[in-house]
Length: 169
Image (cartoon, rainbow, N blue to C red):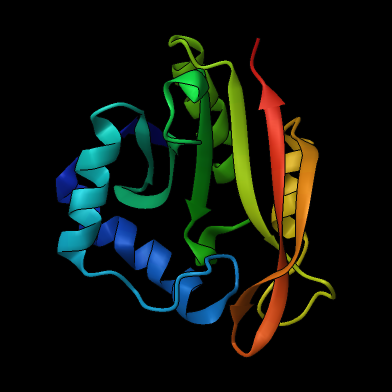
């Protein structure tokens, strides 16, 4: 297993992981899979300011994690939003934990002190969304900061959105 900084050339492999979540789950509230060029641009933009990490195992990218702007005001520069995705066929191997630990280590070497995760949360678990992400974040030391009720519509169903936070220092 190897964790390294992503490059724009990783866009195709990362997009392959993300596309599953867009097309088959309410984990991402995006309706359509972005193009590879769009994803390449997203990676470049993120890397201008934040870490964007990939986890490789057996020579293949199996997951990724990155940080991004929490709120676009200077007063929030010590806070960021964090995201992690693992190839759906490789869940349960600890890749998400390893990625988040590496991301937190990288962020702890910056001015960032507060981490925020925006998570789709089911009113009732269904085939598109479970509480797995919320439970994962709790296990990683995040606490619930707030709930927005019935604000995300995907697959004809309304989902809550929760924000969870972790204070690095």
